Length: 98
Image (cartoon, rainbow, N blue to C red):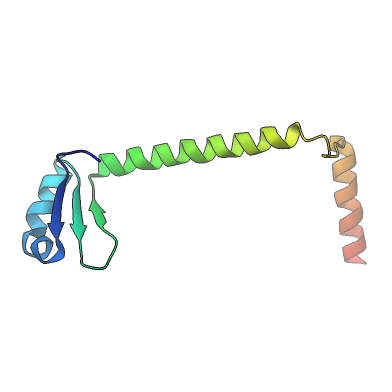
């Protein structure tokens, strides 16, 4: 973590909450709020949150691609043609409707 990240207790965060919000929203480093016996809570700017969301989405996309690639090279995977796949679905729909 960034060495300039500020750590603060819940009690101090309650007292300084308005100032913390102003500082973090203005682009300062994240603030870590710690309560005894609980996981820390991170107060970050909107910009940092959006960056985190983008990075998370990229990671999820990468994992999806890796999974898809693994499935395409699986010799046990049965491949069927597009038309055959939809014909199978139509047959299943007909049997469910009956």
